[in-house]
Length: 288
Ligand code: ZN
Picture (tube, protein in one colour):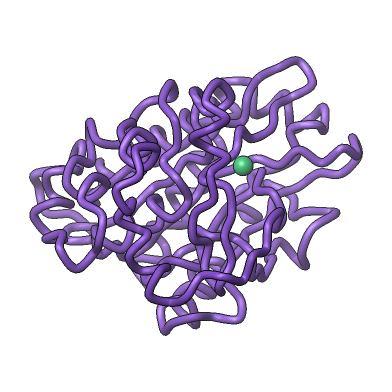
């Protein structure tokens, strides 16, 4: 779940937007970024993209990559599992405002939603991202995660975007699940930044969105009945997408408040199905 624009204080200048990505010395920033440092030490911890050496940091951050040449050799994919397990118990850290692009700010991060029986979105997104990453790594694709456990806090949305930018990612895929209060609402949708703020947010991101939509639909997942059109949703209010300088999309896999989709998301087989579809779509995009 990605909250629609909650706070729109148009006070940040472009300069502030750039410098604030480094954390600006605020204590909350470094602690919020900490969960991702175990596997993405350089790219997530260093702040400004200009000071982070993208190739060394991404290679160090990748948890696995096949040694043998493969279709994905040389490609870098950043996977961004939405939210984090420690967010709910750290409201001060996740509620502080951070740059979200287009002159707006947003809370650093949110807690996400859950199924009616309490299976949390952060656990779902983390599990799916791990499976997607394993599948991609098996194809020789370098995988960088924005967080590598499900017990930390954050990172903030602007820091998540920075990880993708620093890694010089060929594709950035944020993974979420929605929490519509309508139990009949169901289906996935793929969000992309619109209107685009840079070249990567133009056709490359739209192509990634279409390829993701096609792949998930071909794999049997229905497109959303309640958001977007034909599984695609242009958005101007998602900080992670607004701040990306790489091809980036956000996948809302389905509605955790819908009984059928909640059952799928709560089962290992269901999560594997989502992960398989997402991984195959990413591969299709990279093969382009
Ligand atoms: Zn979410």
